[in-house]
Length: 470
Image 1 (cartoon, helix red, strand yellow):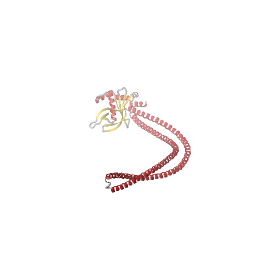
Image 2: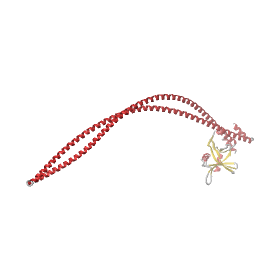
Image 3: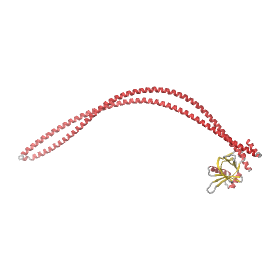
Image 4: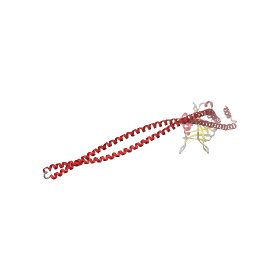
C-alpha cells in the first residue's frame, strides 16, 4: 500500500507530470457496480496514463456525477508480474499496455463490458464479454480509492482547464464584440453611402425620365405621322389592288368563257372530223363498188347486145354515183375550209390570252414593288420601336440596381442582427460557465473544509494543504 502511494505521487508530481503521456483519453463508460446486495450501473470517466521511458501506467476512474469519487490503479513491472502470474498472461509489459488500450476501445464500442466488484475492502475492475451461456472474463485489475491529495490535484487541474476555457471564451467574446463594433461602423458608413447613392439615383432617374419622356413624345409623334402616311398609302394601295382584282376577275371570266367556247369548238371539230372519217369510208366503199361495177361492166361487154337496158341502167347508176362523189368531195372541202377558219380563230384567241397573261404579270410586279415599299416602312417603324425598348430596358436596369442596393442593405442589417444574437448567446454561455465554476468551487470548498475539520489531527492533511497553497 505504501509502495502504491509512492507510485501514485509520481503522477501528481509537477516534475514527473511533464513526462506523463495519455494512452486512453477521458471517455465516459458505463460500469456495473456489484457489491453485497447492490447491483447498479454508473457512468465513470476512464483515463490511462503512462510516464515516458518508465514501465509505469495508471488507470484512473472518476465518477461522472461526483469527481471526488476516484479510483486508481498504478501498475509497474512488479505489479504487472503479480497480475501476469495470477491471471496467466503471456505478454510483456508493453504488450499488456497495448492490449489494455484495445480492450478499452472495445468497451467504448460496447463489444466488451466493465464491472466494479467490491469484496472485503478490495475492489476489482473486471473486463468481460457477455455470452448466452456464461460471461467470459478477459482481465481484472485491482482498484484503490484515490488519496485526497490525488483527488485535489486532478480537481485543481479540472478547475484550471475550466478557467482557461472561461478566459478563452472571454477573449473570444471580446473579439466578437470588436468585430460587431467594426461591422456597426461599416454599416453606418454603408448607410450614409446608400443615402447619398439614393439621392444620386433619384437625380439620375429624374434626368433620364425627362430625357426619355421627350424622346418618347418625339417618337410617338413620328410614329403617328408614319401611321397616318401608312394608312393613306394603304388606302391608295387597297384601291389599286381592288381595281386590279376587278380587272383580273373580268379577265378571268373572259378567259373562262373563251375556254368554254374553245371546248365547244373542239367538240364540234371532233364531230366534223368523225363525219369526215365516215365520208372517207363511204368514198372508199364507193370506189370499191365502182371497181366492182367496172369489173362487171368488162365482164358484160361481151353481152352488150343482150344487156343494153342493163348497161343504160348501170350508166345511170354510175352517173348518180359520180354526182354523189362530187357532192362528197365538195362537202369535204367545205369542212376543211371551216376547220382552217376555226384554227385561225383559236390562234387569235390564244394570242389574246397571252396578252392578258402579260398584263397580269405586270400587275403582279407592281404589287410586289408596293409590298417592298411597305416592308421598308415597317422596318423603319421597328427601328423606332427598338430604340424605345432599349430606353425602357435602361430604366429597368436602373431599377434592378436600386433593388440590389436595397437587398445589400437588408443583408447587412440581417448580419448585424445575427452578430448581435450570437453575442448574446456567447455572453449567456460565459455566464453559465461562470455559474458552473462557482458551483463546483463552492461544492469542493465545502468538502475540503469538512475534510480539514475531520482530519485536523492528521499530519498528512497539513502536507496536502501546503501543496494546495503552493
